[in-house]
Length: 160
Ligand code: CUA
Image 1 (cartoon, rainbow, N blue to C red):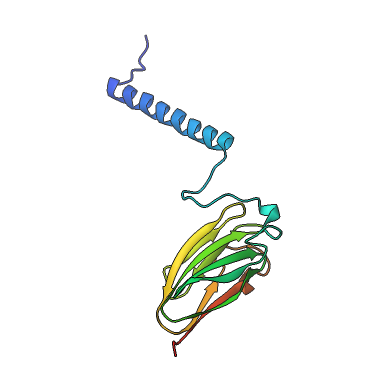
Image 2: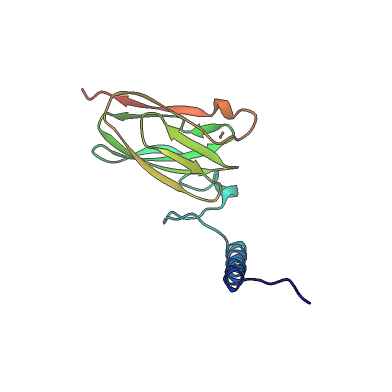
């Protein structure tokens, strides 16, 4: 005599969790074979050519208009380039960032900027600097031996 009996309700949940498992495995398989990307519209780039191809080969601050700036910034062990940028107070600065090697972080104190910087991806983030002063930024993803010296600053100058 078979005394093992499964309640129909239990059986339904077992089937449901089996289906969920299969769906998750499918999702892993799809992302593995189709390549994965971050949400957003910034282009993918070849991380081995970051130091060779523009715009990240010449990381710089670019003025786009009155009070509007773009920064093309390269992160690599263990520095940001440029590691100091100067803008007048009231400026809106858009950062385009990528990594030449491994995963780095980018956080600017007293702003909402807190992003990750991936090899092969361009991270875009914007901040407005109204108060004159110095805003330090740091790498906040552990990236090896000298992670703790990976920092720089935004210098916001008072308008004369
Ligand atoms: Cu770069 Cu930590």
